[in-house]
Structures are given as C-alpha cells and as structure tokens.
Length: 162
Image (tube, rainbow, N blue to C red; front, side):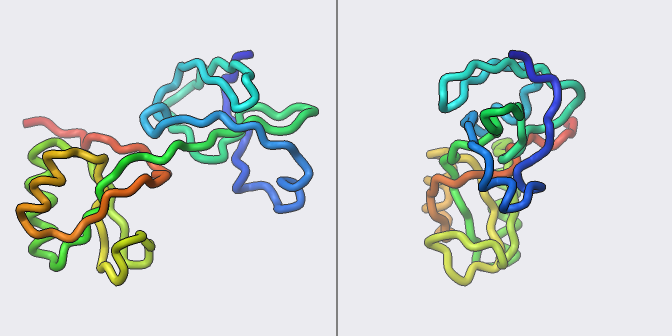
C-alpha cells in the first residue's frame, strides 16, 4: 500500500472516536519525520510505502490509513538528548554559541515545560546526545541531564552560509 497524504491527526479526534477505533502504530525515529519517501512497517507487520507530496514533516499521531480495522498512525521513538539548563542568560549565550559553532542542532523550551531532573529551570536548550558536548558542559559546570525524550519536532540545521 502507498500513502500519498496524511488523513489528519489523532489530536483532532474526540476521546469517544479514539476509544472506538483500534490504533496500529508505525514507530519512527525523529530523523525519519522529514523524509517524504520511505517504507515503514506497523507494529502489526503491515508494510506501507510513504510518498508524500510537498515539504511536510510527519508528526506524532498523524493518520496514514483509516479502514474498517481502525487507524494506522505515526508514533515517535524517544531520542537520546542532552537537556541543558544554564544558570543565567550569559551562560546560555556562551553555551549556545559554542555548541552552535559545532553545528549541533538545538531546540529551546521555556520554564513551563517540565524536564525530569531539572526542577525550577528558567528555560532549557535540548540537543541530540553528543559525548563531546557532554564533556564540554561538564568542564563548564553547566547543569544538564541526559534523557530519552520523545521530541515532537525534528532537529534541523539553520539555513545559512559562511
């Protein structure tokens, strides 16, 4: 079977609708969310080809297939990340600059986003795990935790030239 478009997202369905259907999952790593053409296998062994038009990123809960047996949806694997919680704006600037020079992609979250092991943080920077970055953070005395976390958005390089 070839899927050429996303049929919606489970987040848009009511609790009653979700309770009344069987969910079959296609578990993907974060890096697969940006690929428009790929072959995937559901947790029930169903092989599906994706050939998506346009530049869309897959998201957790995207519905690939809806039939009499239920829904086939996207689920995300946890990603090995470093969650960095600098103690000041100055420390954040220095850390972000130095990790950016290493071309490490980052995502930023505010103080309202909870992260286990970092209570009371004032905002965090999340990067994919890199042992040299962990060593650098240790050397700089920056508070961080290593975690397996389901990231909702793929890491991307910023578009720029030197």
